[in-house]
Image (cartoon, rainbow, N blue to C red; front, side, top):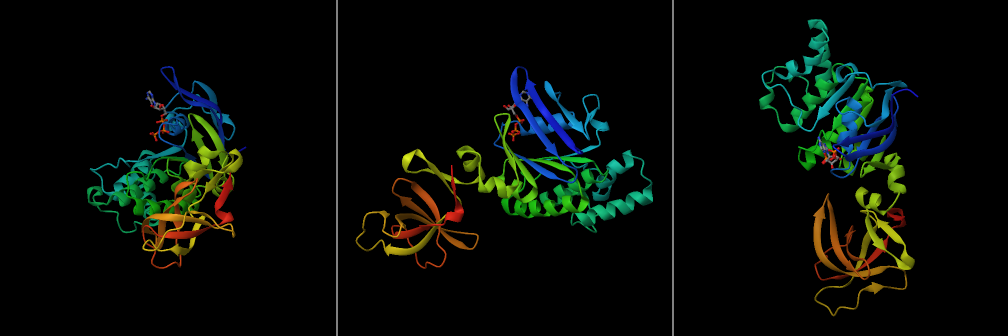
Length: 332
Ligand SMILES: Nc1ncnc2c1ncn2[C@@H]1O[C@H](COP(=O)(O)OP(=O)(O)OP(=O)(O)O)[C@@H](O)[C@H]1O
């Protein structure tokens, strides 16, 4: 197969195993996210692919050719980190042109490429700006343009957005998705944020304690998480149901369909009614992404979040009726 091939990769540090035998392929043009909690070995695997960390066992290959004897700078891979590590003594164009200068690309061609890349990352006209005057998001866009400039056959991105605030991260993740597709750059993208992984990647490889536990498209992972830990990591609330089973509640799974009794009225006991609806007591009311959301205390399931679209005037203490949307549920 063409592209990146990782087989049986093991990375150890003085006796501790950070990566415990990982197999993963990334096809040419594909963007794969390595997703997992802090310390699960994502960066170690990425660094081993780059050639910055030796493999204790296994192999990393490109187009089927083992890279064991190929040093970092000869792999044709680009790197981008959380802190873009821009050269502060160079302006924006000087940063983007850096790799092109190293590759002795003639000046006129370099200028054209820099213009093209700045356009691609949404910074047209920024050529002469000192990097110190850029916002964090703009700096990461420059870092991206710089790592794309030498046209790496594989781009390795290690938490490139984690230093940015949430709103900016969401916007840049979506821009990154488009930019990597337009540039056609094969990419391996490390993140601990499932939303970011789902936004950026064609396939997501979920990592836990040095091993891959599940690899699939965002839709496939969301539809069938391998186990309850993966489900919880992807953003499901895991609840126990009768008979020892478990259910994953997605963020939209529980919907408030009506108020049974306002907090000022005599409360009835929470439970479920004949229609299969649930009732529960509202313990908090919030507003998120344009929608009212509530926290509801449910018998057996404890406190859960629910969406309250179209139900006006819900207050803490109200007893509400909730419906479970089967589309937002997974069996675990
Ligand atoms: N240079 C090192 N020397 C010793 N142990 C290390 C080294 N680098 C990483 N580790 C250990 O290896 C394990 C995996 O670390 P790694 O940084 O690969 O995980 P990660 O999933 O990328 O986490 P994070 O997102 O926090 O960086 C951790 O237990 C870490 O402490």
